[in-house]
Image 1 (cartoon, one colour):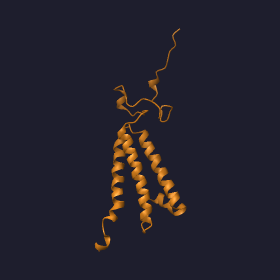
Image 2 (cartoon, rainbow, N blue to C red):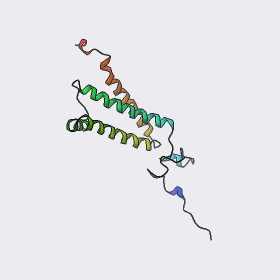
Image 3 (spheres, rainbow, N blue to C red):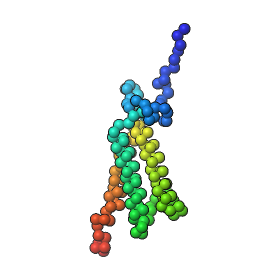
Image 4 (spheres, helix red, strand yellow):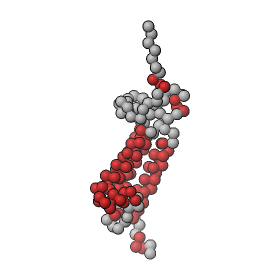
Length: 146
């Protein structure tokens, strides 16, 4: 008697599973699968570079924010300002890194979804501009602008 098997392709790959970090799948093989959103086991170098750049820029933003706060600046993000006011620098850094890491992890896992690479690239560009904004006071003497 022949055993009937169910087609494993009927169910999409789950968000987190045994293959999330140790699998081999890095792209869709069938053309009908390329039309939708898919989770893969391996991610390309562009995705790694984008996500690690975003993480590095986030760390730089946090450290520069703390630096500027020592000279009278204020935190413009109300949520992070709450953590800064109630728990100090440690709570601010934990909240900043926790929120950033969870968001970047979400973008990383969904990097093969439509538009997510564009969103991640846009976030890297925004944080790049923010990094420039943080270092610009070192190059401009604001006392001479008055």
